[in-house]
Length: 134
Length: 157
Image (tube, rainbow over all chains, first blue to last red; front, side, top):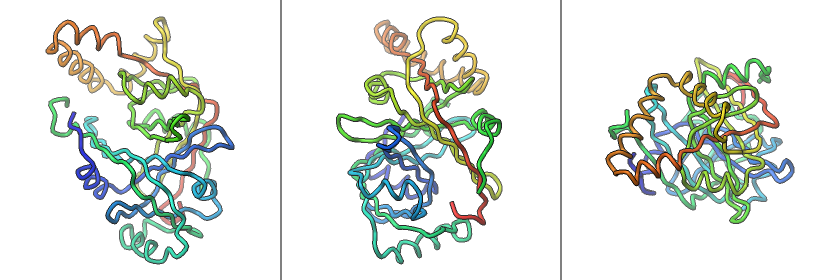
């Protein structure tokens, strides 16, 4: 297995289309995660969540969230990235919404979206695509 | 958007190759999400793992561990999420059953992975073999709650 440093992991993340973020929900005393569309710019991700949804309610109060994205092949070889980011509510999310619409086209139709920036704190990756473990 | 029935959820989990464990480190107030190969039966999610940060955190904070899976097929998205309590499966019938479930789900690819790990350990000598055997852990999340939803590309996620 090959380990990817922050730069390589960031490049891989930019290729992938689905990001999952994990948060600790104190009300449920459980950790939960959701898949979502995203755009990456430098070391900041932008996501848009339904404003009335639980994740959007929880996120502003959190110091950090977990991130994960992966590409798993039918033979189970994979590339994956995982890390942590600091969430920030974005009051004027027009530019991020436009970037999301450009990236995903008609596959992405948000409902009352609230934009958040996720500032990457740590990111690393793993890949078995070029190892002998096939 | 529609909610999945229990039958649909378990069928989806059976067919989905990769899940993710969401674990919260309460001491550092950090959340992490890790992909895993897994198999399910009777409200339990089994996975094989080796010593590392994931296993350390699971042992330290076993309650409220999230399990997440998603897939995009055709023009539909499916996302399943649940949570429960982690435990390491001890020696006995359940351990054999978990290994059988994983082998049945992943077939020759599971056996190949085990073989590759064994080969790697053998190359490292007797100590590496002992460490690999001793460290190999089958984990179980006893799910307390699970739900799923399906939506099409024409709907908001």
